[in-house]
Length: 349
Ligand code: UD1
Image 1 (tube, rainbow, N blue to C red):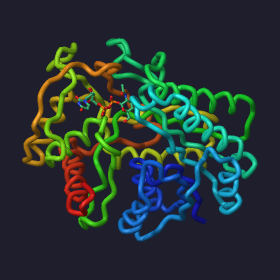
Image 2 (image 1 turned 30 degrees about the vertical axis):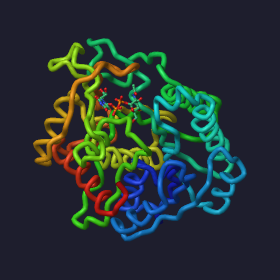
Image 3 (image 1 turned 60 degrees about the horizontal axis):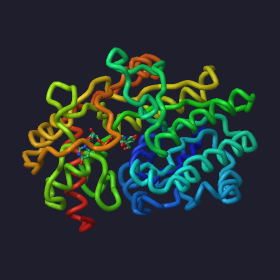
């Protein structure tokens, strides 16, 4: 029988791609989202790609009763993938209480309800942000690397949430969890059928690099600023581990199968990245090469709070989850550009 998975934040960027992969792997998917940073039309995209429309509930997970009603309505839910969260670093500095309430209360509500409704497994979306700037000898960073104090309330919510899950499991709660620490997810689902696409839809001026690159290439933004070229890296720009969102989505399917169907530790941690780093400049140049579209860019000052360089040692996920991110960067950047072209064709931006 198909297992039913609750995907919170399932109409968002990573949530929608993961819903596609879950459906294609044979799971029933129930999406919960408050649509605060995503659109209901994403469900059409998921349906076009998979041929299945996931169940959807517009619920705010801060609302305990409304969240409880989801478990009453779908008593077969066995696992949860918890994406729903606010994620803009700068905004979190301006609105810390909103970030703590959104990102912490939602998790508390889900954890409290899991044993009551016999939900066994939780996959949690964490971030490499918990490592801060690793010492150079710790690169690529493993899951054992020391954590560093978060530089923003957003980053802090990831650290706190990891701790809450650990404490709850230590208390003897009858659940299991896999914590996935993502590096930098980018790109969009590629489909032979251009109407069947899902992707990243930032609100307003993007903070993240790739939407800024694609919007500049489209002429929506005048110029990309590369933040800093005096870092201690080969070309002076920052280095990140950019992972294709579809590869990332597949890691969740592997993690869900492990947490639900295998006899494993009650909590496990995995880095989810490609295992290598690319500089900001390399990203821009690879984008131009892959798409044959020029990006207007200049160097600017460093961005406050930026990490100089980080990339992940993902061998634990490779061997234990039997999963690997192997989509070439140029294909990934091309997928991001196709998505931007679709947004233009649809008149979105
Ligand atoms: C940021 C967060 C991270 C979070 C992630 C969510 C910080 C310090 N980290 O990651 O915690 O999980 O977003 O998506 O904010 N860049 C430019 N010009 C731009 C935009 C970005 O040069 O206009 C550079 C940045 O300096 C950085 C790289 O591109 O070196 C990637 O930036 P971004 O996409 O914002 O991700 P992170 O900062 O790595």
